[in-house]
Amino acid sequence: MLIVIEVICSDPAEHQQRVTSRSVDIPDLKLPNWQQVLDHAYEPWNREHVIIDTAGQDPQASVASLIRHLDRLAAGRNILT
Image 1: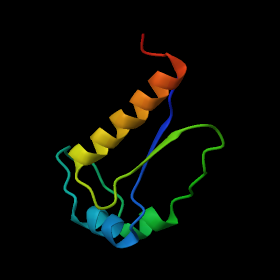
Image 2: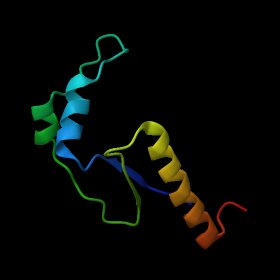
Image 3: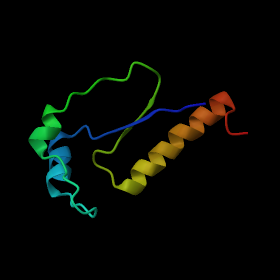
């Protein structure tokens, strides 16, 4: 079974702050600037998927949210037994 996970940040100000303050640890990797992020074409998913909204939460909380979603899917579909 394939589970599609979409990670978003629904708070535009927080999203912009994340984009403009991130650093890169891979030599010569060029990160997009905020305008490039805004200009990027987004195609909404047209199939069932899990959405994790990271706005207002740290990475640990986002992972916990994802695990809760996956646990619910597993319980409803008996996929992890």
